[in-house]
Amino acid sequence: MSGAQSPGYPEPPAVGDEASTLVGSLERQRATFEWKCAGLAGDGLARRLGPSELSLGRLLKHLAYMEDLNFTRDLAGARLPRPWADVAAESRSAWVFGSADLDPPETLHRLWREAVQRSRVAVREALGRGGPGSTYRDGGGREATVRRLLVDMIEEYGRHTGQADLLREAVDGRVGEDPPGPPVPFTLT
Image 1 (cartoon, rainbow, N blue to C red):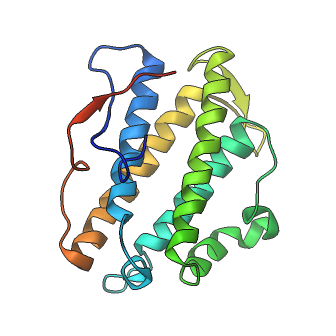
Image 2 (image 1 turned 45 degrees about the vertical axis):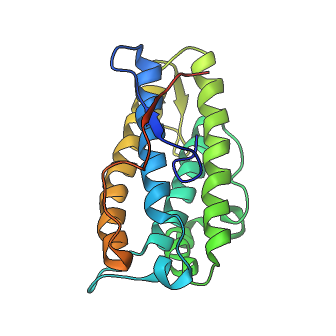
């Protein structure tokens, strides 16, 4: 579900199983973050506040990278796709932030949406193999549960969505906790 393109936003179940609650919470964070970044031209996505290096465009690219790093590479065990695979691992984080300023808005949104789609597939497959308690080995060889990864990504989105809220308000005054429209009950499919 896309918070910027669909009416309403995903609402995790108030009474549901662990997987639906975790994935539903992540989907709500994704929809809210997407809404904060939607509809801006390049100058709006590149706007920074004070001495901070953060911008909405940089956050979009960073979260696209985090989606692919954590879900595509680590959880699914697949190779990182382009553009991440084209950059040396040791300089990738700095490149993600610096190069975002050169990317057109459509590219930033596309990178993020495609990474989210790959992540959804990886999570669905991992949950099908054993639920949130199933384990995998991350890129560093450490064992972790799908549960822990979902919680980490909810935290990652929570932090950056809060930052995006401040950045968006500075661009055009858009504020709000949730995307417009009613909550849409999330179901894990």
